[in-house]
Length: 118
Image 1 (cartoon, rainbow, N blue to C red):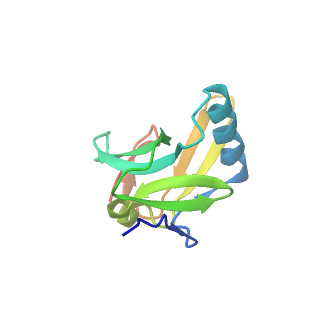
Image 2 (cartoon, helix red, strand yellow):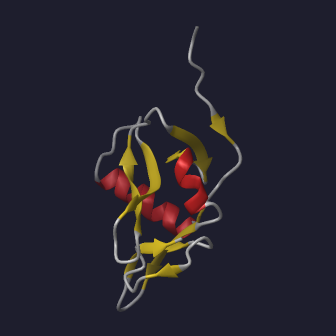
């Protein structure tokens, strides 16, 4: 019995074009292996209870695979309830530069913008 790689077309999150260009730049600068995808998720901790996971990683058994704006994205199915409808954006300003997580599921966020409560 063979394992079939599944990639679903329903996208639980959005990634802005600006964020995609920064992700691609980082991937190229860090010489990320071709079989790695973008891992998006949550973990316990941070000022508000949860913090976001965003980085390059290999596919794991619990992951679902998505193609978003041409990027291969890995996300644990259990994280979907916290991330459904979220948009990852890139902000470049005088006082602030980095990824922004616009999450409609967050009841509260902290000042750093990288943690939330649900």
